Length: 326
Image (cartoon, rainbow, N blue to C red; front, side, top):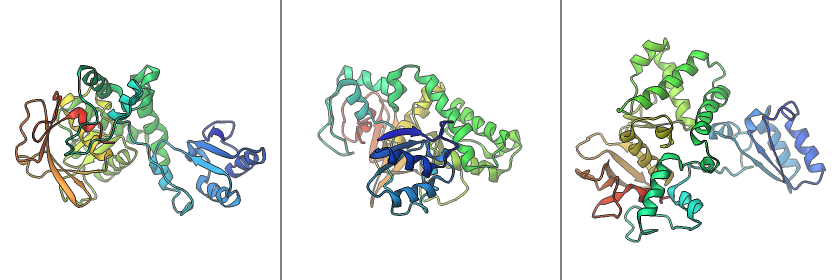
């Protein structure tokens, strides 16, 4: 198979169908095309290639699932979508130690691994840089900031063609506000006033930032409002808090929500904070959760998710164990 990136200036001006047709004519069994959204009318060309070359393999990838969703109509029944999640602590441990560990499910009595000082040290490192495997290439913070810049400057404009420089500055302001505040939310009226934009445009920007997985908006239980900044707004990748030198109490919540989300749970904020922080639903079943430090009480929640705890105890679950859920 031959790999190429569709944003390469040597190929960006060539029709995708013609380029891949030539590759197949040279005897390759398939192609791997990265940054597919840079190719003009990419989904139409892929449909034709799929139909004309049924025995060839065609893999395409992009940094945002949004761009692949835009081609669903053209590619109906012709492709299998595969989402690459952030790396779990279980996967991080495999890279670091070579060991393979079973997944953990909330309520399991058998642990996938017995905790010790080495594991907890790995977990501290994972919390700072372990969600993306390029941490092994060093310069993690610089590489991470380059990802944020690429998403804002290159990816998002593909989905909001009318986006202005001021809109890009607003999105950076949202990131800055969340990194500087101990309260994981933004004030709509304040941002609109400071940046001279309407509320509708601000909601649109937050929606797109959520869909490209820069942010994760946590809505109140049973909240169906289309226009909302939610009860809490967190960075989708918990490592962003370290990179941006953001508030670490909020990082804990972002880590928990990320673990639950990657494991398939739908997470909402509880309306009565005296009962707990979150309600997590998986299918028809749901559990309530309280999140905090090593002495955090469960309130009336089913489980308390504690920092700095080695072993599960009663309804208390250590945070490192959540990282083994996917």
